[in-house]
Length: 108
Image 1 (cartoon, rainbow, N blue to C red):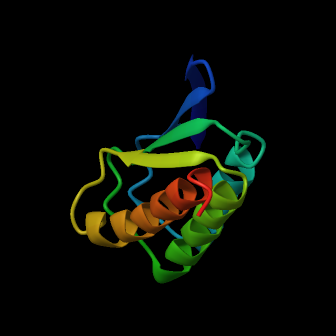
Image 2: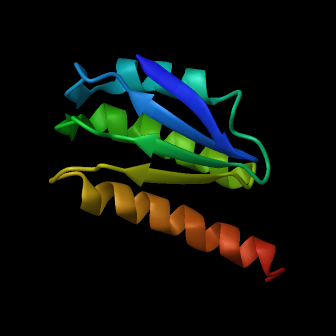
Image 3: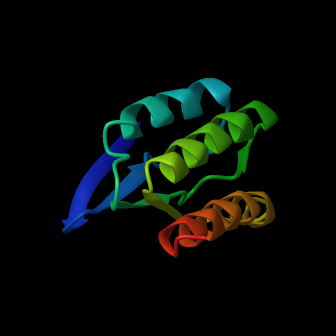
C-alpha cells in the first residue's frame, strides 16, 4: 500500500501503490498508521499521490489528523503528483501547517 524510502538525512519519500485511485477513511488510516513512526521532529516527509484521483470526505479528516500530528511534532509534510481536484483542499491544509511551523520556529 505504501512504500517509504529514505532520500536524504531526515528526508523520506512515501509512495502510494499505483492501483490506489481513491483514498477513503480506512485506507488513509492505514497510511497514517504506517507514517506515524516516521513523523518526528525536524524530518521532511514527501507523500507522492501519483495516480490518485480523489479522496473521500472521511479521508480528508484522517489526512488533517496526519497534518496536525506532523505540525505538533515539527515534521514537514509535503505532497507531490497531486492531480485535480485535490490541490485546493490539500494545499490549504498543508499551507496552514507550514505557516504554523514557521511561526513556531521564529519564536512568535
